Length: 525
Image 1: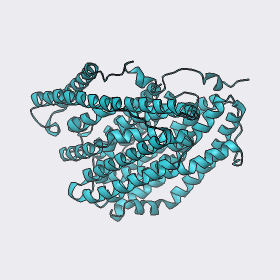
Image 2: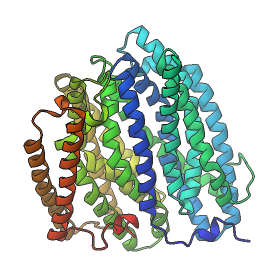
Image 3: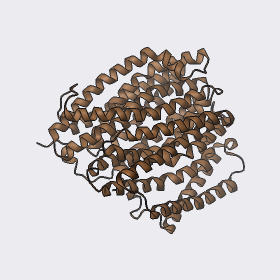
Image 4: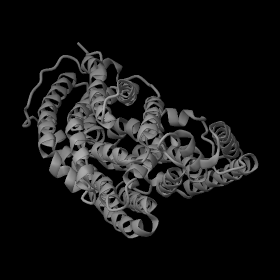
């Protein structure tokens, strides 16, 4: 009998739209969380400590979680479903979950034990009092990494069965848990408040896993937990897992280096990176990751073709979708990011000077926004061909260039200097992926694609001119000095006019997708 999950593999949903919708909801909830954190902590020592402590379990989550397991597990699991080997697919799901349960428990225990050394290694430039608070938070937060790794198994099963929305919307409960915990602790007068925030973050991580588990188990069918590694499909997952972990490790080392270097700057630099990254990662997740995540199962099915024609076409269409959405986001964040930052964060302990620093850092990050939004898509091209090693080598080159640039520029430019290094590293990584894929599957882009990008750029320029005119005409003072009501209508007016003009200009220039936004909704299919 066919399992429920297998019977649904043939559906024709709009995967990138489902991914994007889930990410959008989670990001909206995330911004609500960030607004609360900014109001209570601003860029104080507590905000620095929480931002640094959260990085450590997030590193483990990113190393072993969604992206890594997707690249190693989904191609094998989707291949079994595509060949209607449902019994083997169930067996693989149970095997991988069993191994991950052991891994999650071991990591949680090890992280709690090693918290003092991990913290000192991460922020060597901080005084003992700040390191002590951060260590306490790390011990509370580290088990969250285990729950996130288990949640990645749910994501792998759900996405392989073309169920995308739940896995990407699940972080909503993680964000809401933090908001609720912070408000409850504040009303109860618990001190220090940041410790209560850490506990609510851990609870939210457990809820994020538990909310996905019933659907994932139903789709996977009846399976038994196992720790077997000798069976062929499990061995392929494990073999692919190692190189992907190394690739993710490169990205996480880059993230850790930002915090490491920022710890030598004045207090507030780590928090500035945190707040700016929250805005920067919105288009990366909403458009870049949504297209890449929804494309991976299809790329895995198309990689068997000797000509690679379908693979090239999907990559090209996917990149056009990313460009159409991300390039205007990049321009808008650079030009109007001060209004967005002031509107979202500037209240309570978050001051006008904090807005200036966060906007500068956000603008620097945005230089590499298109590259950062595209690398996962093109790395997925290699992953679909079961080559998880080549992207690692390219990522190392990007890391070295980005870290060297950031370390050089952080002294004259403060936190924005670190962001410039990250942007340059992302572009180097993307260019290497393009070159490597071109030599493997043939030329991906044509002169028509270059012309399309130039048209999108021209539409962005026209939209920027109108958006700036709105700001200059209607804003008598800078964003950081404006009242809340002024921030609301100027931000809405500038971004709204920017968006309307951009869409109109892309239609006029012939750069608007032929099927409208359905191109993004279908993940480029």
